[in-house]
Length: 363
View 1 (spheres, rainbow, N blue to C red):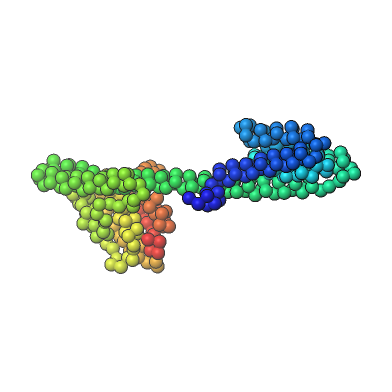
View 2 (cartoon, rainbow, N blue to C red):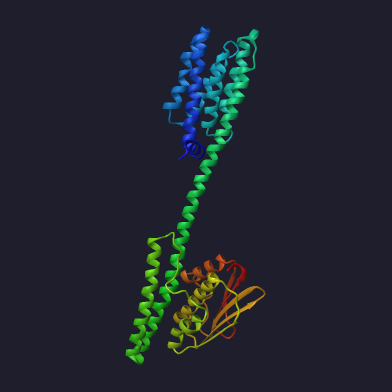
């Protein structure tokens, strides 16, 4: 990778580089003062304390305070030692960057306090070099602080996106597992019960067919688990006509009369077809398991840019407070994902009505 590119995108490298430059600037500044302005030699000794703090103090808030105090002390001497202003700027910059407060005032406060003290210490040599150094260092610190904050937020956002994608994958798998396998297992139970009362050989053949379909769907889910980045697909994409030919079969096997009616031109895309199919699958599976109905109706119509799916039966109806299990939760998630709406209610005269409406342009 290009080193300049790495410096721009890697906040840790940027932080280390900035601090290294600051330490070198401070050392060069104090050494120049030590050589050319011997009256300030004490600064050379004291000035090492903030430099050591940068390298050895793990607590960032404590480190920021040490740097700020060091900047203030060195700023006292800037009216008499013009070579010291880069050290002041360097220490204020790192102090502001390391300050964990929302408003980093410690470095600024000590730096300006030291600059003001220098005016009283050397009234005949008044200069603004200390104030300019504090302003420059503080401004650079704010820029670095902003860059590091942006990098942290970007990293957190990336982590959250990864977690959201992982949760969405789990949710998708849970929906598919519940809808697909649950439907096939329910159909197998119906066939087994029918075989006890009638043609056992035919029931066994049907159970075998259903079992093979269930295994195929399970294989597709396992493939997706091994390759989470791949698109989740079923082994055989469903058709809306399969609602009548396949999904209604378990109900009819129980002796329930099922009527399926759908408009010819619904205009649904692949996502819309899968959404409608899975919702109808869950609804008819629930009728098979719980409704004790004699008749069931599936209506699929289009009007004003929306497709409406209505599944109803003449069974015992929903409980007063229906349990929002995996089935209803899966319906809600599928409907919300395409910007639709849904409602579960009692049917006049007895039974249950599931009413779903989804926009065509979102699917």
